[in-house]
Image 1 (cartoon, one colour):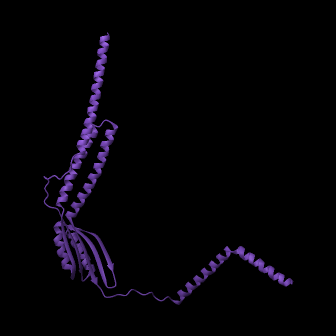
Image 2 (cartoon, rainbow, N blue to C red):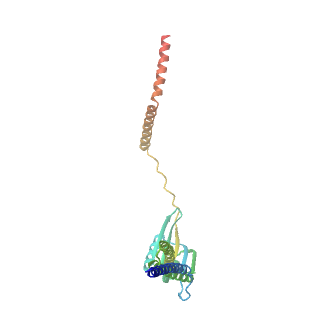
Image 3 (cartoon, rainbow, N blue to C red):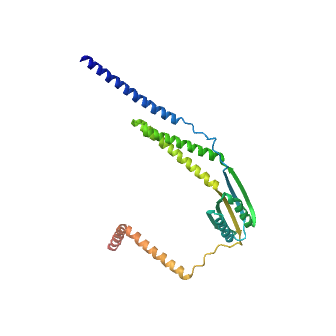
Length: 269
């Protein structure tokens, strides 16, 4: 009987020891996986090929014969080219009227729109065209976005299947949240680059010279209006005086009593 009890105790100790070793091994495995995920180096994927991403912009300033006709014509041409007017700012002055427009046109229609603007110019003051190749940044952002999404997915799998303690769960969730913010930033940058590449930006300023037109002078005020204003001002003065006297009536009462006392005393003498 003693031998059976001893054997039972021995087996219990053996199983307990094995269970503890298994838990330690699982914890070590989770930590190792977390370190492995965190140590992934997000580098450019050299296998990604891109035909070329070019951002084209232009700044143009010219004189036109008819400001309104030029404005209407440019708006119509932009619509025909499947573009849009991002903003338009019309200004009028004594010597010239002007308009500043920001046009967005498809990249394939950029040269066509430049030719349209050149034909509208009575005198070209400025014409600046720039091109920026963002192919490298486009590939870099795309590859980093892909890698970060893969890392995020691995953390999600780790959270679902391997994380058992509260500390492990919190660590995985913290890493996922941080990666999600980085992914959103990369997506925003990628969308911005796509928009700038797909639609070129043209800032155009054009003006029309006009004969000097003086600002209208104030008409002379009629006599009746002046009398009305004077009467109104006088009445406001009377009201203000009455209100002021209402504030100092105790003082007036004291002064009146003193004056009356002095007058009566002189009469008595």
